[in-house]
Every structure is written in C-alpha cells, then in structure tokens.
Length: 222
Ligand code: DC
Image (cartoon, rainbow, N blue to C red; front, side):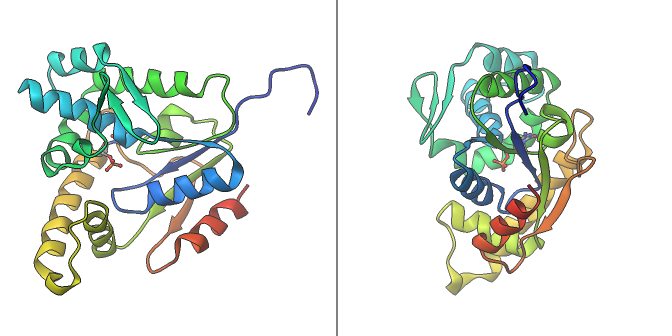
C-alpha cells in the first residue's frame, strides 16, 4: 500500500504458558520470514537475576528500580549490565522467583516500554511472551496462543535446561510439571496483565507435533 503513510512494522505476537514451544516456534517463524525475534520472558528472567542477587522481594519498589536502571541487550546471548547471563537466567532459582517479579506492575511497565522501543523503526518482528497480543502489541498483524499438554510442556522445559533423562522420567517430569503449573497459575491469576488468550488470537496446540508442522500452521494464518 502506498498512501504516503508510514507503514507499521508487522508484528507476530506469540503468547502461551511455559513449555508450550513458544521460543522454538517464534525463532523458526522469524527465520522463515527474515523477521527479528524477541523473547520477552528472558527480560523478566534478567530482572529476576538482579532481584535474587540483591536479596529484595519481587514485588518491591527496589525490584522496579533494578529494572529501571539496568542495561539489557538481547541477541544471541543475553547481556545484563554488560554481563553474559544467557545461562544464569535459566537457573531453577530464577524459574521459582520469576513469577513474583513478573507480577510487579512497575517492572512490567518498564519492560513493556523497552519492548515497544525495541520494535521502533525495525523490520518485521516475532515477539513472544504472556501479554504480547493482549497488552504490548494489541494491533499485531497475527496473534497466536500456543499451548500443549502439561506433561509435554514439563518434558520440554527439562530438555531446555539439559535435565531431561528418559531413564528417570517419572520423578523429574512430575516435579517440573508441578513447578510449571504453579507458575502458570501465578501468571494467569495476577492482577497486572495476566496470561490470557488475546482477542482474535489463533489457538495452536503443539502437543505431539513437529516444530515444522506448527510453524506451517502459524504461517498459514498470515
Ligand atoms: O517464557 P518464560 O518461561 O521464559 O517466562 C518467564 C516468566 O516471565 C513467566 O513466569 C511469565 C513471565 N512473563 C510475563 O509475565 N510476561 C511476558 N511477556 C513474558 C514472560
């Protein structure tokens, strides 16, 4: 369209609970389209690293201050105040504490502003998180809500952190599943931007499907 107006940057918003395959699918969709990719969960995790190190509560004003004053670069690695925290943001303590940090409205306001600024003037983008289609980019060209069966989500999360051992499946999967559902409950019931299926989102269930298959379905909605 050439009507003299600045064309908005096309955004694909991918939301969903932990382990639903958001990161893998978002990365693959971005690669297929030549778009940039933003993992907003990594941003909440980075603030959580600072909160844990400072020994402050996730819902405190100090936590918001840490978010406000940090420098954060997300690329192949995650650089927090110049330090590579790519591995540290995936630690179990971060998994356990991140929901309380993500429930802090002042932290959210700061990170949402960073997410919108990241988009500014850039090429098309795939942005993944919990509130992308509902709050951050409600005018996204495509909104996807990705979901999967809870046990499969738990297995994927263990694989992601390198703790997946098929030989001792039952106990770690039960534990990971309990941790994930506790986090899902907190994310879905918090008052500030809870995890919801955004208006107009396509709900995609990735259970038992290959990444390629899910990516094709997402691309079919464009
Ligand atoms: O997707 P993830 O597991 O890396 O997300 C980590 C936490 O951050 C999770 O508890 C939900 C929260 N989060 C959020 O509240 N809003 C986002 N846009 C992204 C993540």
